[in-house]
Amino acid sequence: MITVIVPTLNAAQHWPLFAPALLGCVRREQVLILDSESTDGTVELAKAAGFPVHTVSRAEFDHGGTRQMAAEMLPNSEILLYMTQDAVLDGENALANLLAAFDDPEVGAAYGRQLPRPEANAIEAHARGFNYPAASEIRALASRERIGIKAVFLSNSFAAYRRSALMAVGGFPANVILGEDTIVAARLLLAGYKIAYVAEACAFHSHSYTLAQEFKRYFDTGVLHSRERWLIDEFGHASGEGKRFVLSELRYLRQQDPWQIPSALVRTLSKFVAYQLGRKEARLSPEFKRQISMRPSFWT
Image 1 (cartoon, rainbow, N blue to C red):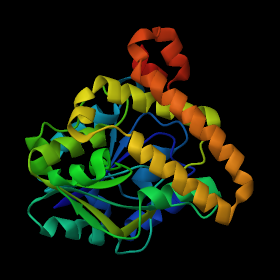
Image 2 (image 1 turned 60 degrees about the horizontal axis):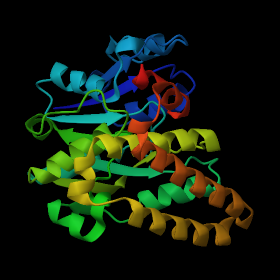
Image 3 (image 1 turned 135 degrees about the vertical axis):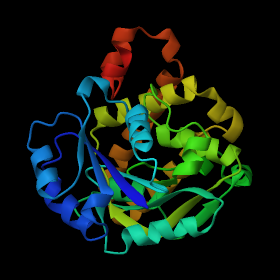
Image 4 (image 1 turned 90 degrees about the vertical axis):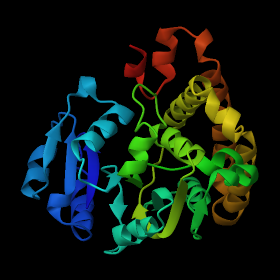
């Protein structure tokens, strides 16, 4: 048995694309909506679609803790498949292709390919192509020798977990600023499980972040790596992957949209500064951290 778990907050704008695509792949009773007190009719839309809905107060919502709560609510689900409200499945076989990875009993988690939105600009499109290539891959702990911290890359925007494996490594951590999926991926590899990237399982999901939003996200990533130092100790620094990304982005933009290169260079510098600030967050005041974080509530 599988259950698709979707945290929502004011998801009405995404519903016309999200819900039909999901219903094309799974039965409505196999979906659990975790709604954080939406005010735009999301709950009514979910119930009209026949989806079970569980309400979580905004004050209590936690990226890791709330997903773990769902796992504990579903003891009979062998596979827990997490999505975000803005990820639109591509084709009726998207979920089936992802779930096929669990035919291998050593696979503890699997994640699908995220495609850029049709309206994505070149910077946005490159990021998706770089992080979600066309070739599938199975990773084990030994993969860290080849790709370092990239071995634990995984996104809960479209990812599934073998529930027994998830619970065996302690489930999703609560009270982390972001990266609950990364932490679980690392724990799974260290425990001897494998992680599958399934390029044949696709969903449209990308973001056009402003410069400020991107700064805040990379600050939060730096905070994660500061507070979860063991990720770096076990899997290596992100600097090598960052350099590879920048060079790939410049090559891509030269071919697709050279006018975006100045913007990309400014964003690269901004992300570097933000990440380094995040790594040194212990020296910063709580008020300053609230201002430059994507999750200001984390600091209260």
